[in-house]
Amino acid sequence: MKTCTNCKKEKANSEFYKDKRGKYGLFAKCKTCHNIAVAKNSHKYRDYQVEYARNWREQNKELCLQRVNSWKEKNKLAVRSHDKVKYAKKANKLFPNPCIICGIKEVHAHHTDYSKPLFITWLCRSHHRLVHSGKIKLS
Image 1 (cartoon, rainbow, N blue to C red):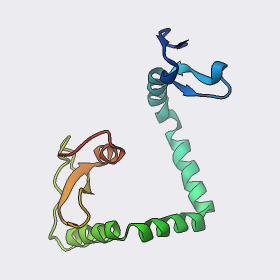
Image 2: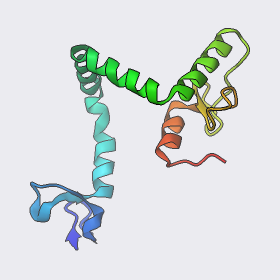
Image 3: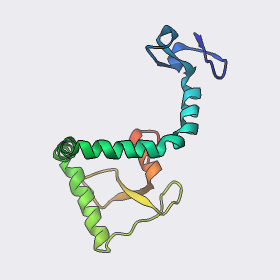
Image 4: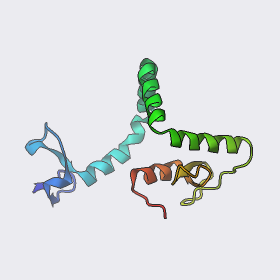
């Protein structure tokens, strides 16, 4: 058991991130408090993070290209499905609908089954990421 330095609650060690520098090898704040602090402050560093990532990709073009090509080689069915959606949209045969969760009009095509390339669910960027991370289940 360890006490969070932020909320002052005593919590199980599993409620703290590991940190070699911290006492007992754990972070001082519990996971909940840490995640709240990160969410509050992440906007301050957004420009720096975007610029850093852009510079890194520019300096490591070959590595980035290798990673993309490796993913495409391993996921040929997904690439084919993405291409079919892109060409159907371009040919005006497929029209995006608002996100099925929040109604935002700027959407991504989500495939639940790549063998059915034009059977898609329209999701905004944030909900699409949550579905892929497993935090949201589509029925």
